[in-house]
Length: 329
Image (tube, rainbow, N blue to C red; front, top):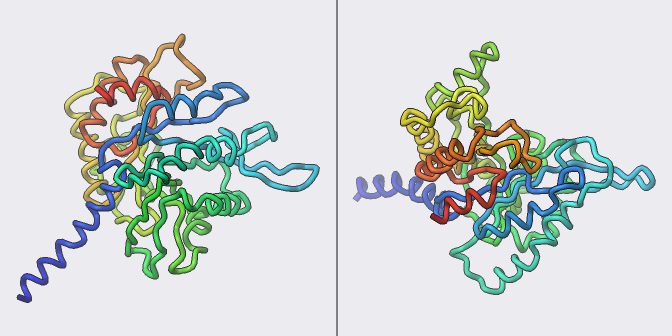
C-alpha cells in the first residue's frame, strides 16, 4: 500500500504539469502576431489582420508610458519606442475595447474548452514602476475577461489556471515580477504571467552567439516554472547560429536542435515561444524591418513547418495571414 501511494505521489506533478501545458490550445502551436499595433500612424490594420486569422491567436502589444505635460497624468500607450509623443493609441482603446465583442460573445457561450481565445503578450519598452502599476490596474478593470491563478504562499507551488477568454503574458524583467507578483498578497489573483530567466552566457560577442546555438538546452534554462513564471521566450539565436540573417538551408540538425529546445521546455513545464519568423523580399515589407527576416518565403516556410512539427507553443511572425494559412493546411 505504501509503495502504491509513493508511486501515485510521484506521478501527480507530471499530471499537473501536463494539465498546465494543455491549457494553451491543448499544448499545440498558436500563431503569435508580432508587433501588432500601428507604428508612426501607419499599419493600423494589424490587429484586424491578426484577429482575422482565427482563434486561438497571440497578440503582441509593446507598451510605454506617456505623461501629459499639461496635466501630469500618465497613460499606458502602445508604442515600439520608450520615448512617446502622446499620439500613440491607448492600450485600453486599441486592444481591450477592440476585442470586447469577441470576449463578451465567448463569455456568453461559455465554451471553456476553447479558452483562451487570445494570448495577449506584453513587451514593455519601459519598466518604470508607474507604468507597471497602471497596467496592473488596467488589467483589474477587465479581470472578468482574464485567466488568473491564486497566489500561493510558496511561489514554487503552481496554482491551477482559472480559465477565461484572455491569457496575459509578459516577459522576464524583475521589476515586472515585483509589481505583478510580489506585491500581490497571498491568496490574491495573478492577472499576468512572466517568462523564465534564460541563463546568462559569458564570453566575447562571437563566443556568446556560438554558445547560445550549441549549448545543451538545460544550460540555457535550468529553473522550473514558478506560479508567476510559466513560459520561455526564446530568440531564434538559440536554434540557428547567428539567427535569421545568418541562417542557411534548414537542415535535419537544425530541426533536431529546435525539437530539443521545445522538449526541454515542456519537460520542465513551460510553454515556449520563438521570435520572430519572417521571410519576405523588399517589395513585400509592410513596416516589418530586416532584423527577423530569413530573406524569402521558401526559407521561412521551412522554419514554420519545423516549428509546427516540434510543437512550439507560440510562433511569432509579422506575416500573420501566411503563417495562418500554413497552419490550416
